[in-house]
Length: 218
Image (cartoon, rainbow, N blue to C red; front, side, top):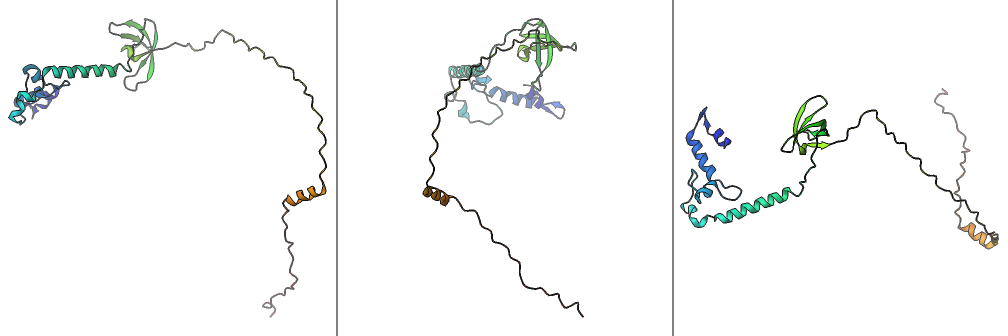
């Protein structure tokens, strides 16, 4: 409705005719249950500024009210079912609990506070260490356990029990018989199977006598 009023201003003045036409269109626009406000009140659509055929207002083209109500009820049930899939109830907080406030824009849990008052509609009045007061809903609060700096745990850890070591048992090793000597044929066969080392050619120097050039003799 606010958009209709804002769109009816022309050259700094409110245009009544423009607002009346937009109001007729608003009354004929269907809602979530596929029924317009005019159909809910008059059980039929009304004529507006948009051109329409005369037979479009006939009763056979209009859906029954009970069908629209069933459709709207079913749509609401589906909406509730989808919402309850991930929804869960949060435990209530008490006065003096330390919590962390979620930032509404960045969604970060960054502001510590203490609950000082409990409201009637799952809202809590919180006080930060700087002295500021905030009123937030339960879903924007997360309970935390305060840890004071410099505190150490007084309980001393108990040393672990020693693990008993079993004495090593000396195993009796049986004397192995000496390996038999290889025959000459087997030794030759083993030497044949071994790869031969690579042989390199010996470099030789040329025996030709060199003569100095005669271009510098004259």
